[in-house]
Every structure is written in structure tokens, then in C-alpha cells.
Image (cartoon, rainbow, N blue to C red; front, top):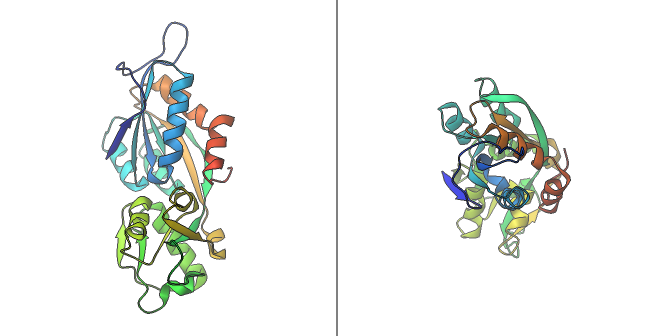
Length: 245
């Protein structure tokens, strides 16, 4: 579990007499949102003095399980509707989730693309080492959909628990390629290149967000969800390469 605080303050919950949001807002968010939500959390704190946003960034399936097992959280932002459904069907969402962004896959390769990868078929060539996300993780499910659409069968050398893990294998030189989100490849552009492929259009992931039923800070949860859907936050997401919902 990766927990980071983006500001000061110890009050766990609530709003003050003037209706301003106060205290700590704990956000469970998909690993692929790391860079964007770090910026959005900081901007939210600036717009709400006295608020601290704590981010728990991991694979959506792991986060959904943590929520359903009682982990204290105010907001859940998933990289796929399937993992959000795990939370809503357990009765742990407050209201209906809303999609705030979309994302597509690219093939991440080391700078210079030494293996000359141009599409999914190249990943099945002898000797090409590939990292994928595990199937239960949104990036893994999307990868399998894209590979099936392309008629490509391959055996990855590693299955990672979130997209950052798959990307790290490329950055460390442990694999020749990985299927990751376009946004993650862009964030790591100093170390990797992203190869676009047409089948990614068959595996677009919707990102839903919702306030949680037992949120320690329900007012903060509602305010953060609204902020993520606001123009400033949407601009941050667009700048990172996310598509509009």
C-alpha cells in the first residue's frame, strides 16, 4: 500500500461552520493515476485550505478488495468498471459511480526501440521478453482483449500486479516490451517509448470514481469527487494523455 499525504492537517473528517471542507480525505486510486492524482490532490488542497489528501495508489483489484475488507477510505477511483462493480455490488459505494476519464494501451519499449517493435505481432517473436499486468488488474484484462483482437498468443515472462510494475520491468531492462497505458508511457518518456497499435481501440478502459458509503470524511469525499470532474482537474488528466469521458 502506497500512502502519501499532500498537505497538512490532522482533523479526520467534516466541514466547518462555513460549509468549507476540512480534515483528511483518503483516496484509493488506480496506480495509473499516480502522476495525475498527485497533482489533482495538491490542487484540491490549495483550493481547500486545511484539507489533507492521502493517496493509496495500487492496482484497482487490490484496492477494491481492501475497501470491501473494511479499509478506511473516502473515495475510490478505479481503472475499470469491473473493479468498481466489486465495490458497488458489496454495498460500499455512496451513490452511483461516474466515469471521469478513459485510457488506452500502448507497447512500452526501451528508448530507441532496440527490438524494432511496431505492433502486437512483434511481441510473439522468439526471444522477445514481454511483461503484462495480471489478468485481474485492469491493464491486464485490457491487454488480453487487445491480444485476442489481434490474434496474437504470447507467454509473458512476468505478470505484474499493477501497470507501474509492468513499466518498471522495461525501464530496468528486464523485458523488451510491456503493455501499459498511454499515460504511463508518456509519464516515463525519458526512459521508454510508447508504440501505438490499432487493437488498443478495442480495449479502452473507462475510469469511474465514487464516494464510499462508510467514508470517514463524507463531505470531503463528495467534494473531491466533484473536483475530479471539474474543468481544472480534467485539464490535468488531459495533459497526462487521458481521454475525456
